[in-house]
Length: 234
Image (cartoon, rainbow, N blue to C red; front, side, top):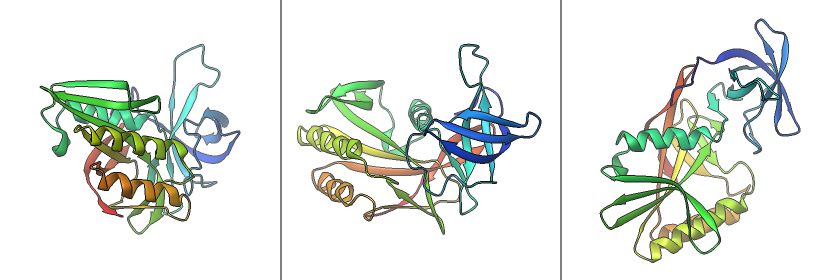
């Protein structure tokens, strides 16, 4: 995924009201940016650390910029725009760059499925074969090349696991895909202390036939791309 223009560098000051971030820029003083992530962003919001933001030329926007990347408490880069994860994965799917998900002829986005009025991020089709793919963005950096998911309790995440298990029980392929938007990470674990129900639901879904894959990313001011699979600690 390439940004429309290279990101601008600044210094992160604070986030407030979930959607707003104050950043000290190199030439415009302190500006307020859109924070495109309503999650906890644990270990991501470090006062005084380097960050990078995009600018919009849309005159209707109240905020002209969006906070895109930050420096974690461990000194790694983190992509915090949760919407970017789907774009990153979509482009990799189109280019057949995800080894476990190649040669699907049709890629549909935001398709309704399951029993709980859900939408799947991607429905892949190859002949009469269906593969349901749910994408989760990961930015919880624990240092020592380890990331965790989730960084807050996620009833929505548990719901998606139940839905994936349901379509797997019907004979379809179902995959949970973790897009790890962090540099220098090679392991992904699950935060039992934060959401023990998520981990138990995850384990049950795996027994029910759901597949799981996590891939790390390279991050630059020009864009973010999937690089390689990371080890899963379950």
